[in-house]
Length: 271
Ligand SMILES: C[S@@+](CC[C@H](N)C(=O)[O-])C[C@H]1O[C@@H](n2cnc3c(N)ncnc32)[C@H](O)[C@@H]1O
Figure 1 (cartoon, rainbow, N blue to C red):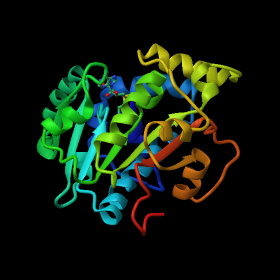
Figure 2: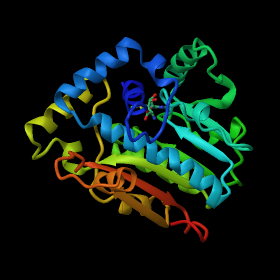
Figure 3: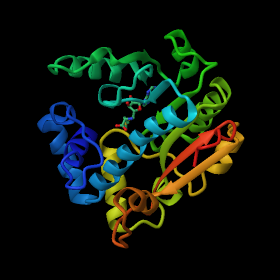
Figure 4: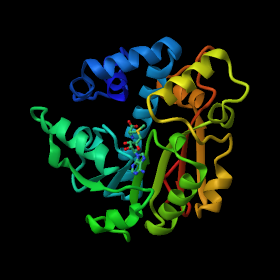
């Protein structure tokens, strides 16, 4: 489904990114799932496209401003950043559940020209294993700054799992590292006071096998408790304004956010 949306967003007149692999990975099955979500939640393509574009830009910014040479895609799914956004001297690590990762590798391995070696694949079940230990065992240098992109995962975890993973990232990575992730608002996660449309969206996502479990309107306390000492978050109106240059009241982005967190204030030059 996300590949179907990335394929569509790649064709926006105001193109924010291009994913040349998304169409082939999505296939008719991915487009069919996305079409069913469109029926209950039309803005999904826009919000996913903006989220992908913003996190893509984080790679260039953290490489240029923070000296990052390691990018970790945590809960990678069918992420294609390692193939799309290579930078000289930068290593990509894709961390995922062994079953999901095996399917992804099998699928991209069949795509002519897909650079399967662009990422180091780290199979890790977060419920039983420590992601930092898994990464270090596969070559991540814990004493070097790292960008962690944790996209489309936090809403599906319990709060306990979000806290545990955030604490491991804050303590286990070099303090010059940056963690970037998206999260949803508290009412959406709890299914409270929702419009009929929002309730249908939440139910449809749950029917896909990944129910929404965690949301908050203020991520700073959890990140502080987890050991982070610099936090920025932005909502999707702010994201749309930054990337598309306008504000439209009818955009249904009120429950979507992106957070950036670091264990200490990033170096000068970081906005
Ligand atoms: C909704 S997908 C997001 C994929 C991708 N980051 C994106 O934005 O398209 C959630 C990802 O979290 C991973 N995940 C869920 N539970 C996990 C676990 N216990 N251990 C490791 N990965 C897990 C899934 O395998 C999946 O790749």
